[in-house]
Length: 326
Image 1 (tube, helix red, strand yellow):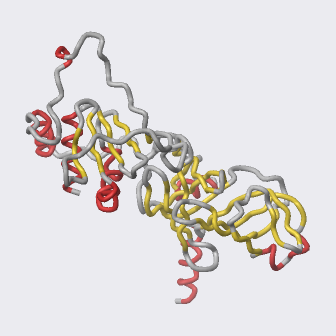
Image 2 (cartoon, helix red, strand yellow):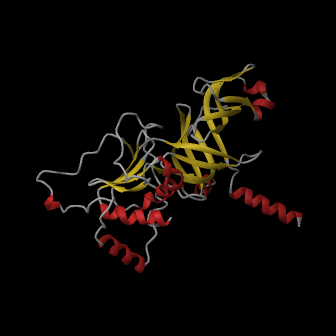
Image 3 (tube, rainbow, N blue to C red):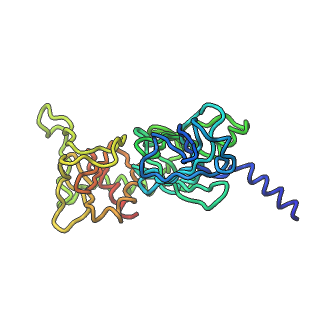
């Protein structure tokens, strides 16, 4: 029985490598410790692995493999220097094998299981332009970099397919990068016939009067030469460049008194969430954003409010009802 157990253990280990996170960084390891100009000042650094057990072989200048830790915003807070590479660095600067627990418009939260020690979570910010949808609770290999003291994900691969490719059993899978996930194309959920009819009826039903704003005027009723309303000067989430919205750039349309979330506007139309509603409703909004059927924007405002902005009122209403249903 022990032999069968060991054989099963070997097969399991061969199929999935231990989850790990490695940051490749240039620097110098000496008796006083590790130093690198790219490490943020507040980052704690310790020596571990081969660099600790075989210090003479790993001291000096070069490119080192570090095991990183981050805070909830993706800032690098701690790193363990594991070893100095014997050959020049090849490939990405950051590699993470792990289970994706959460993804939103700004970050990925990855569960990492090192070869020894307890599992931990690593937060990766989305690099500029990386907005592709990743399925939660799936295993991924991330590649990225350290910029401005934060770990950023630039692209990803399904971990199982990447492992098979490394073993030579399959070709390398297409990367998930930009706004495209080739492994999800053609797998979007198709609504049941009854549900599709219900959605059409909801879209054709006239909008009730109230704080949600008047119905969208027909194109012929608009003044000649009037095109789509010009985008107002607030931060647009499509390819995030900054971690905080710049100040002094306006506020979202006001909600009725006492309301913390709702539809407002006369074109474009806004689903506005006040700061008081973010904790409860914003995760649901972001989870359903990939299913929004029309062109839209997500905006952060300096006062803490957020909004989903669209030019199709009926589509926004139908999608908003899905958000409310959870």
